[in-house]
Length: 205
Image (cartoon, rainbow, N blue to C red; front, side, top):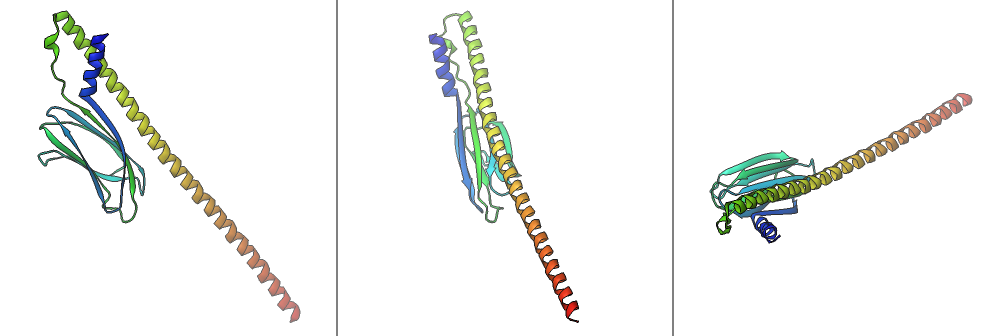
């Protein structure tokens, strides 16, 4: 039981996940930084929740200035990479191409720091093997739970986007129907008025 508790504490230090929501104004760029160790794995998952055509420019830059990923007008994405060097990694969401529409971006950051070897304190090989098996099981469980959480958040954002699109489409359909009905009613009244004036003139003649 004590071993399990220690492994949980170890994994809490090895893994970290952060979820954020940011509003990127028109002609603006929002950048964030994460300092990670060498050989660590970092994952960036994002989804444009609201604004314009639901797209954004994305750039991920390493501490050495090399561009790890750069995408234009993306609505969502998931990018995972390994840190070749230790330092501060920058990821930016750019809305500079938009003229007037701000955009809400929801994103998650998953960092898997390299595990440190702490097996030297274990007294026997059998306990070492059991420790590593339990460590692997907890790691897999943590990864699965994190993936499920990210997928749920992703589906919630997609559901909200689809609901907004449906409501906007329905609103436009209703407005167009009202416009068509108004035009038809105006044409009918105009035709009745014109025919009435026409027959009144014929009677006078």
